Length: 363
Ligand SMILES: *Cc1c(COP(=O)(O)O)cnc(C)c1O
Image (cartoon, rainbow, N blue to C red; front, side, top):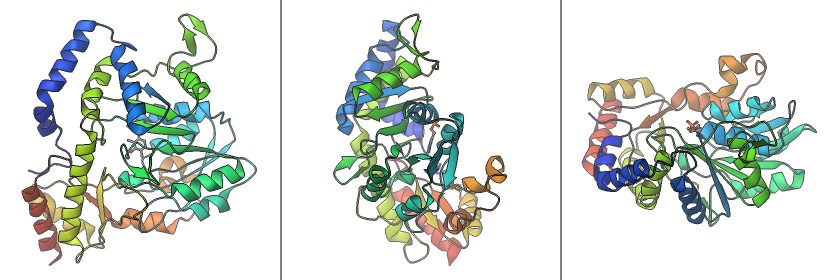
């Protein structure tokens, strides 16, 4: 069996380090906002090359807290991509704002800067690009649009920890960068977790207050906040994994490039735009015969998945407001995309087995 991700092999490879970190955290009994949280924030900020990192309970919360810290109000419009996980748009809705979906690039699957600019209205307050599947969005063009129109730029980096573009890590280009530590992400914990990075002490202070009941000093509450803290136990595990993230991402790139060599004459393999470093959270190809390929893989005990089968503007939850919206590229990608297993510990032999199965299905 070849799964989509293999967390067990990775745990066994890191078992000594992780078990020690967890046992130390248990012994310290500082389970909430303890030393591992503080240290992870400092280490992640240093790794990413940014002044401030604030952890929270999930990637979804990271987006939600960033949207609130950006001052987005009910009725404001936020431009984002329809080809992403629902959480990107949920965060906008939590603040009472309106997600405005614009189409994506057929090669990179990322939001198209020119379409962002065309969708701006007097109510637009922010833009949330997603670095989908680990490939950085076109941040030079998007930052330029945001500064010319005075829009807040919030990066959804849930799939791009360690990806860089223009010599900077994703997450450090906009005013806020939002990360997820969901177990299957490039940097994943053993439960839910998230983090926001930002450049100013004021924003970091606001985020810290929001994640902890609107409080700076215990039992003094300045705003209505949330219970959205990262567990110290999760932080202990993430600190261990952060030390290996460059290798994890290099191994993902090895797997991806081996897939592409083996498959490029049969399917549309992922396009690397050369502007940044793609960290392959997913390896997503396009084929008009997706169903046949997936059935054949399943017959050989090889997992595969569709990310994402329905673009957000076609989801039931947005069906009313998006009834007249047509985003042909996102719709076409959703009907032809499929993702193959990818994880740092995947062997060349496993990759070759998947390649052979895909080729056989399309022969
Ligand atoms: C995983 C993911 C999220 C949400 O992260 P959680 O930690 O699961 O809440 C948000 N956006 C994207 C693009 C994701 O892939």
